Amino acid sequence: MLEGAQARSLLSDISRLQKGTFPLPKVKEQIERKIPHDQYEELSTWIENHPDNEISKYWNTELHFDYTRDPPGTGKNFVIRMPLAPHELVTGLVTKGIIGWFAKVEEIEEYNNGDETTIDIAKGIEVRNQTRVYLQNGNEWEPDQSFRIKKKGQKKGHIYPAVVIEVSYAQRLKDLKHRAETWIKYSTSKVRIVIGFDLNDVYKKNQSATLYVWKSQDGEPELIVKTEFRDTSGRAIPNVNLCLSLSDFLQDDDGQENMRFFDPNMLISSVDIVDKLEDGVEDQEIGKTSHKEIKSKIKAQKSKKSLSPLHIASRWSGTLRKKKVVNYKPMMKK
Image 1 (cartoon, helix red, strand yellow):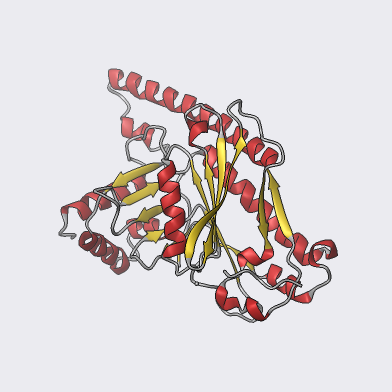
Image 2: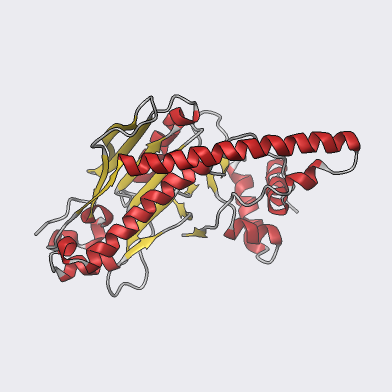
């Protein structure tokens, strides 16, 4: 069995999550724990050596977490992430928009200008849904969504994604900034673009929301976009778009300096993002109401001494998503 006390405690928490008996959380996107690096290594080794254990299967297929080897200050460094509805729906909208745009680049001449290189690039897009990435500073992180290009004839895609999406809802803005900069810096700039959505004011009922885009410039993260796309009244701000180009999805070792291709732009409007965000907020409010109802039932059942709270709590388990474990110069354009 595990020797480290914090490793044992974390394993116990994960076991309860896997069984659906973890106490109902407050409306929050994550569970935070602190574990020393040697005990995390011990826990990881235990998981690796017990592949048939139910906890190991859960860790490898469903548990959505970030491990930070050297957190700033004395911060907690093992974070189990449980995205709420607004978070999920905004991520899903952008993912759907990018996938749909690549399909148009592949199939429609208006988007590819009849250029075979452009078409081949578009065919290689891979969505890396909830993929755990090992960064060079020892962190093991999972972005909310990521994308990379697998070139024609290439057996495997890149280790690191080229484009990462991070959504902050019920979290701190400085965490979003830190994550974006870390993605670029500790992937040796193989992560070229980090798209960040700050939805924290929506969570706080202040309504506004902000789009950020960080880009690798000479090996360093640079904030190139910071703009509100939803005002304090909750309305979409006109003429604000998320804009990407095909070259944003290519990395340095794709040989783009010797490539010539048609480089179309993609736009996702603030109106579309805000519409989806509204759906998420509505779903979240419904969820909070259901949460209160469940807590009331637990309280009532306690007074009757008939039904265990953990039995009711076991309904909560499906919010952790599947994942798998897993290097941008401006492109020459035609």
